[in-house]
Image (cartoon, rainbow, N blue to C red):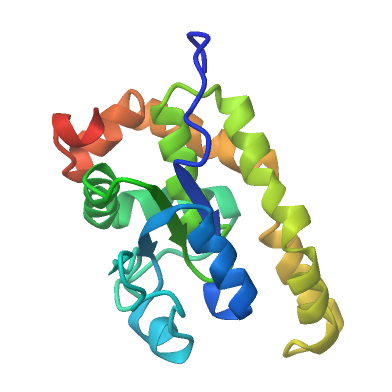
Amino acid sequence: TEDGGCTRWGAVARCANPARLTPAGCRAVLDYGVKTIIDLRKPDEVDDHPNPLRNVAGVRYVNISMVDPSVPRGEFTTLAHDYEETLEVFAPEVGTIFQQIAHANEGAILIHCVGGKDRTGLIAALLLRLAGVPATVVAEDYALSDRLLRPMNDEFLAQGPGTREEREAQLGRTRATAQVILDVLSAVDRKYGDVRGYLRQAGAGPDDIE
């Protein structure tokens, strides 16, 4: 962190859709110490691919849809702008998510959506920045998604809908680069002062933030 500290190892993990996990993968998650799961997916995404760990004894599972597809959004221009709009339009949902994180069971917290990059990546970035991790390091963490999602992206390129050229263009527009999160965190500072200011406006109280 900027004051020379270190975040607590293993306190929070982020991942893509856990429905892809094998039984051994599920066991690895539990062995990691996960006691709370916060699922950021929309209801239809949850119904189509239920979280295999949602009914495990001793694990608290919470589904908070971070976005509402019925809410009008502006036209997509850049991924950073899309993230900024997400944080603005769905601030109350983000506030609720942080309240759940703040009051989670003792043990590790697993946060996930479908790809582990967009909704989950945003929450992880805000968490790290709130803890005082430099923005450049937060951006490096976010950019790991680009490498780790490569197998899924390659699968999409080979078999996804539309032409290959269209699929390549879509992936190009939504790549997880460090600059994306740097731009988003800069926008948060500009609009709200810092992440604390944003979270206060999103409905998280002082105790939640601490």
